[in-house]
Length: 515
Image (cartoon, rainbow, N blue to C red; front, side):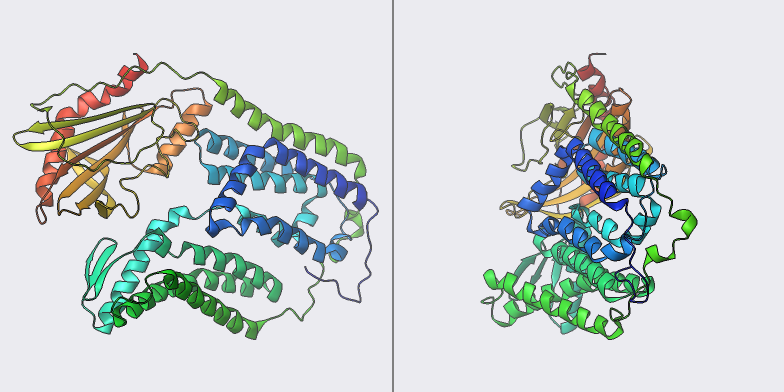
């Protein structure tokens, strides 16, 4: 799709000048309608080096299309109403994402609507001929933060396994491990997300430009996904070994990052070098537009203006409804109140650790005790879901990275038994610098139902919001001390508190709603 053989005549269709101008205008209008979504993408590009490549995606996509201008010029613009289906689907997805404050989904939907506008105005033949350049726009979406924790786990597993294979004794607890020469922790910067995103983006572009068959393109792109994951594990192992062998004098400061990027650059060069052995860029591809039959080349310029009008009208409905939702006043919110039940009494604070939940409309922190067993309770209530005030938010977490006093040595969703019924909770094990330990359970209450899955919670709250129903939610977090090796006793204490205080906690949503 990148070049036209010399044997094929280049026929520039006369409808292209007005069609291209109209399409560009409509795309800009649609982008203007969803300007806050585009700005949210740019803000991430600006503040995060991991996604700084987003600035280049639109220019690269335009350049890729320009490379194909001769073959694309042979395809007459043919308005296709099927593009309106994608436009409607993208708009609905954007509205749900906006209602749930899920920026990544809203940004993907925004890109999909831009492509839907192109499809509706220029037709499927054009979209298929320029398929990769158009799809490449999705790389502009700053996505991948959800992979940080899994990638941190892979890096820790890989590094510890290689250290043990080397014969170095390792003690590991969660993302923290110790070797004879010193202590290490796998933090967000060690996840390798930056390397993975850079590798996939460059790999997909390299595969498109270098190969002609979709099989080779797909295989190389998959390799660009897998190689950086293992390479990052090797990078982490290399840094630990350099520090270990130098008695913790090297690979600890700026050189920690220099070694990492140098190693990653070497791995990528090797990947591209190996991939070049099967390159096909010296073989011209058959132009997609050259195979169009005369029956399909009718001039449909008369349908361009109605199609453009339908795109604009179909796109404007979604942001208009979203702005109306945002303009609604907040409901009344009395203070949170939880009455002690089941023999529990108010107690004194027993820990300096506090969770990090942001944007709550109402918050309650309280300490309880029963038969010498202390409990910390934190409730965060969100009356309605909106940006920076969401029940499920990436900024809601147990502890900050590199906290000087506390470490999260293990967090997972586990099944527990409360009041004789199975329930899922998010469980975390906290370790203080003074040796103290805490066992933490957290779950959300939505429509009087306990919910732990963040994706399901977002979907339910967004769906309720767009249907003008209650979209409030309550985060419940409880914690108790435990001694190493006796975590089951702490879990039993948390289960007892959840069973005894459960009815009072569930009534909290009704109280704040005034019902």
